[in-house]
Amino acid sequence: MLSTNLFRSASSLVRPMVMSAAAPAISAALRRGLATASSRLRAPTANDISNLQDLVSNVLVGDKDDLSHYNNDWLRTRTGHSNVVLRPKTTLEVSKAVKYCNDNFIPISVQGGNTGLVGGSVPVNNEVVLSLERLNKILSVNTADSIATCESGVVLQNLMDELENYNLMPPYDIGSKAQCLVGGNVATNAGGLRLLRYGSLRGTILGLEVVTAEGKILDLMRALRKDNTGYDLKQLFIGSEGTLGIVTKVAMLCYPIPRFSQAALLRVSSFNEVIRLLSVAKASLGEALSAFEYFDGQCVKCLQMNGFNDLLKNLPPGRRSEEQDYYALVEVNGNNAHNIELKIHNFVEEAESHGGVPVEGMLSHDIQQEKDLWKIRENIPVALNREGVLHKYDVSLPVSAMDDLVRHVRREFHRREEIRRVVGYGHVGDGNLHLNVVSDPTVHYSTPIHKELDTEIYEYTKDMRGSIAGEHGLGTLKRDKIFYSKPALAVDYMKQMKNLFDPHGILNPGKVLPDTIPPESQLP
Image (cartoon, rainbow, N blue to C red; front, top):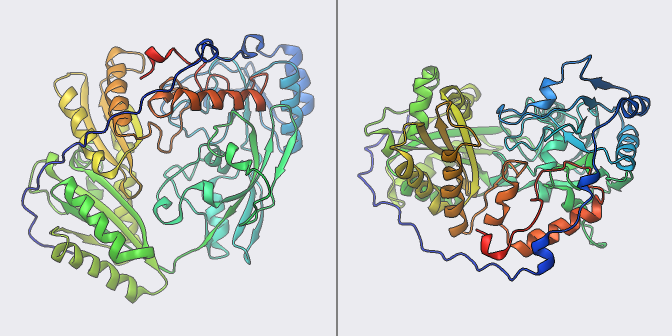
């Protein structure tokens, strides 16, 4: 165990004053919004369903099958009314089904593992659901180039298990890996725990196969590390949440599994000290640093109160209130056990001697201990979900502003009886904050207090020139909030791009982009 006296109280974080950029002038055409074909979209008829059954090898229909899984999102906050679920087995089946729907103005809700948190994976109304779950083949593993090729319906955990046979791993790891599908990860540009070391999927996805809204099969599967021939079209589909095309195959760059890994769970007494720990970790650990997560004392309190006390045996006992405790989970890996242990001990010594951050905590000594430390971080959202209605905010900010936002929300809402808890945790190594607010059941996404939360959090994020969607996407929940992060002119170009790729508007209608662009005076 790493143990020293805790650092005395640190100075509070000062919020920097950053003026938001002025919105560009908006033309009359922008004010009116671009014309779309959405008014022509219609629900499938019995004849349509019969025709689709001829095109797709597996079709579920509401009067015979239970479609609740496909109509409800993970948080159970969004419910669609689809009566038809298409479960194609091949890219060709996807192509035929999409062409039929496009020709007949039938909207499609594209669905992966349905683990999204912003309503992007379930139908808005009565669209046809196109589930990718049966496109589940791992096609090849090229060990010479470290490239895995698979269909988009492969479960991430299954891909991890297969790659382990080749001593390889995907470039990302997320909490929902047992349920999420690779295609959905690409469509939402999933981040996760390894982004600090390996970067985002935009740099590690080397090839895609995409079915366009017209049913054409677009082959972008060259899977080259370098290719400067024209525009890199695959980047348009990464993070587009299925609104521009349907990803059916993926080629991704993989990495050797480190032979040794070690984690340290450290407690400090202020978020300033978390930031100093991060600076020391980057300088002293270098490329051996694979993850740097943080969570605050309120997260620990929530774990204690919701059945996770057994996980907390590895935590050093808190000496202050939960408002003053912060925890950093640091993972280091490499191919030499002695070097890894030496690096992490040197990091702690460096933090104390030069960073001025006395810490205490737990250092893992085997794989099971490391997993136990990670379970603390991974079960925070589970504990929060048990406590009440969960309002999840996924924002990217300058690291120095992350805890300031959490404290700001606590100050503004601590007297509201409906609010039970406000916590902060996330990927501090890349500035991605998961700010979670737990309320009683009377508060839902259409009540005034939720709208107040949105305004407070998104206004702050805009002032810090941050992003309101760090890794979860926009879906239906945030599509009208996009102007907090993007100027109207950028949104206009996005809408033109959507109209180019999907002129009938059949792919995931009501998601990602707002229906119209408001007048400049009404923009955030």
